[in-house]
Length: 112
Image 1 (cartoon, rainbow, N blue to C red):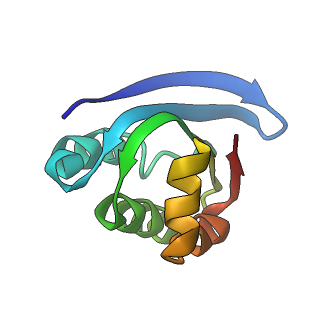
Image 2: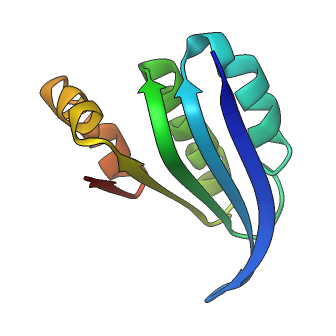
Image 3: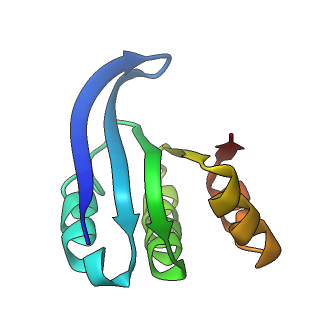
């Protein structure tokens, strides 16, 4: 099970922002290495933008990880944004199980 995290810094409306682009299989088996990547930027004062692209699989463990990260950053008044582009079959599966509401809480979600 593979995933990829690309970290870059870009200039946005809020000045410089950390950008994490995450793709692949976002499942329980990958939580530890995903957590390690997120912890690298969790406490940085720059706004954090997380983009989920080309997601093959996704489970509630990953959703909980994002919710936890966002809550931690909000408690420190640090801006965090998550957007996701999901294939229509994955989005439908999430919607049928009420998991799309988790992403609605995080930020924006798009599907093809």
